Length: 506
Image (cartoon, rainbow, N blue to C red; front, side, top):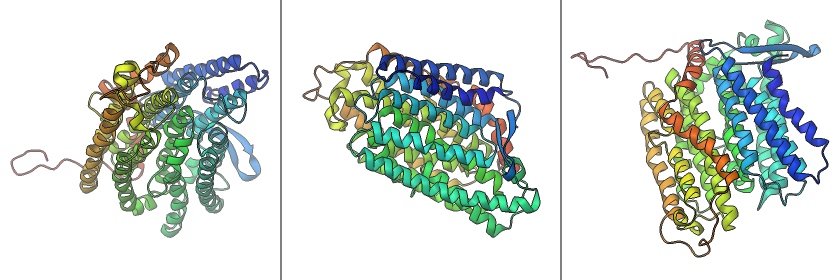
């Protein structure tokens, strides 16, 4: 059994142990859940330390026969891109558990059920990034829906049932389209390389252009819904608004990255010709997402819906970087996924603490918090600055790489997307000014600041945001070989700089 498989199974072991505990022992259950996620995080970091940064191929590979009659295997392995996303997932999990210590209180089901769902979801998150068998990936991809559906519908607020059902229906639709494409791949593979779902074997198939286009669309639409990319995004604001802050962190910080990861791992790898065909259309959708999400975020009055719409804009940048077909764009998009996970986590966690103290998530109700709760206010401010890609904070480097990588091949798309940065300043600075500054809104005078547990939970998030703003090399050194290999496999190379008549680079 490989170290990677152990990492996949660890959260399930913790969930099984919690299942044996009496549901009345809530404090013990919370501690067990936190300890489990902490052990998984340590194991994930240990895995990263053993990773060979100079190797662009898959590492920690394991393959075992699962359903031999159909050529289905339990097959896992990770490259630099998958490693970074797994690392993000396992670090965020204990932060979510610690930050949302009392989130399960008042839910439809017990605290015990809540933490079992969280741990099961963590296994699915690790598995979906590690799978190298397409059928196994699909199982993890669809299985994630179950715990998320119950976390939103059972422990959320407001119109939680409707939001959970909407999330489930959209995701199931995308999953069915992807399943149809997987079956198509399997049929084609049967006549060329034998019955298999191995991604390496499937990437060698000779598929006609028209067939490849249809199969590509089945995968891409599923991933665009998960991401979410305009116009497949409409489930997100309702889900984020109704879910608990911790669930929202996992939903937008991790699960949505499965969509953009899938575009890299499956759309580009399995359908290179279709990728080239649809790239112009996808770039248009990406630019629309950037501008559309930013404009809608500016007009939001609810802080959780605002964060959800900013994520639509951010995922437009990520998708644009992926389909820019340059190594800078790919590296920037992967780094953007990691950085967005932590900046969104900071925003949702602090916004959740603000809303629980105030009893409202309306932005105008948070006036003057800087005077009353300075630590909470400054935490929200730093998270907001990271979201708008302020230089010196983590998101700046990834957004810069995406724009530079896109500009070298698609300058018009990059120039239009740059306006999203201007809009980002508006959708972040306006709520920051309303919520943190100005006169103290009546009802805020005696709000408590962050307690010790909340400070401990938010501290590593802030540390990562600041550290990667100044020194992103540790992650980029892991990402770059895999990104360059992906671009090279598609037959692309980075555009060479042009030189004018006086020898100056353009």
